[in-house]
Image (cartoon, rainbow, N blue to C red; front, top):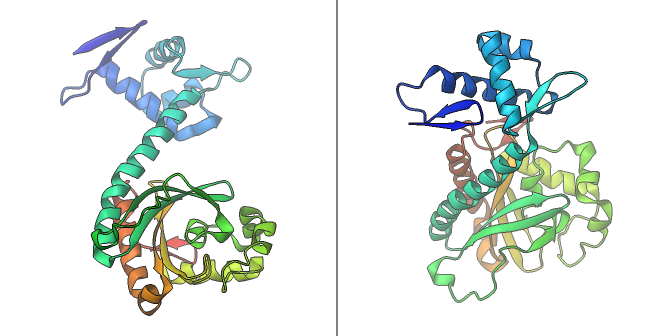
Length: 278
């Protein structure tokens, strides 16, 4: 089945993908790999092995459709920004939909509420949650709520791949100074860095009233296909229930985060040790 758009004939890929479709796919994949730097027609020809005249016509067609942009000065070609917006939206939707399945399983497994949290600047935002049946009387939902990352249960896990010298900027030094509500909250960047380092060694953070008074939590990072941290899974509950099993729950959370990461296309592994996903 084919559809003509402008001067380009686009085919729905199947086992007998036609040459035009294959060429378009190769060109778009190469441009996606080059990012904002883009590539010249010569680069595309060399990278795809396609005929130069075919590539030139295809680039012209893609530009006419608004799918690629050519720099008039350097003549380099890059994907239009709308590709990245659509990809980001699709990625977030998949993260939440797949994450909800993992959260439901995790909450049922440990008997405590589980959350999917993402980083937005210096804040941690809850995107999904799962409340186990025995805790279903919980009335308050955290979905959509934002919290300073320095004072969030997800903070150390979300910043697991941040260099120690960059943590001050990542969390905002003033946020730590205001973190006095929790008895064991870190008061300095060095204390917060110690939490991150401990989480890096085990693959999860175990916080005993460090983010919120009366609350214990365990959190682990979720890596995306690029190896970057896309989110964190968190399990939290009253410290009276959590304290004696923080490490056990931490292991369960890290395993769940690994499953979700693999579902999102990340390499197999769990945690970060010395900067390497293991």
